[in-house]
Length: 252
Ligand code: ASP
Image (cartoon, rainbow, N blue to C red; front, side, top):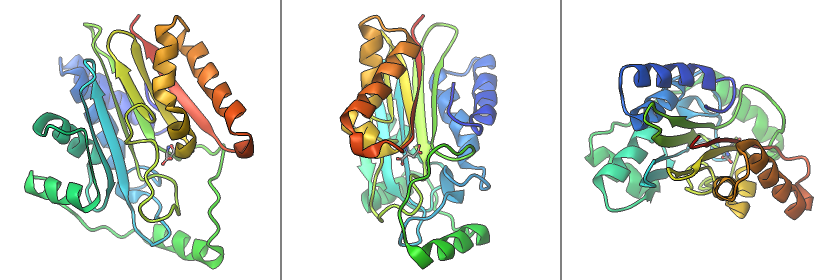
């Protein structure tokens, strides 16, 4: 399962990995990587919209059935943040690296930086600069983070999440998407959840973790998502027009 219309291509890729007997972790990595490489996508990967300093900054995380996790945040010029997140999980004793430290580590570990300029993105940025107003737009299709959760034929779960974050955010802002428990949470004993929408609301409520904990208490995936959204609505009365969404999968 994955978020938004761009998730269809990601699901297809993930499904083919599983059909070829690939691991569920490979499936969620390779699935979202398709969207990271689609430079026509304006909210995931290097085709994403810019921050207010005119940079594309990327966030991603991955988590497996046993709760092992890797995450990367505020990195620039890498095509596949999700693969860097996985490498951090598999090759370091840490969960998360950010900014220049993460970039340095990635370069030392076989990942390459590339430069791409997308005229349309530049034009949109110049247009935005005229007012420089930061207004996250709610309820529009074909935008936003890709979060993916999956189960293989043996019932093993994994999840991934990758994004260029909210357009025109403050340089250095990190949203929910690379934060385990906010943008993604996997517990093989219970289920998995991922999130999209205004990241600040997910972080404040540990959104994806909340959904998984509710499933642990017996909520269906749908009811767990509904309850988590209701909590966000109740606790954040100043944020009524903002959009949030969850996907959830229980181990059944
Ligand atoms: N959650 C992402 C962020 O806050 C954006 C989104 O999914 O809409 O950066």
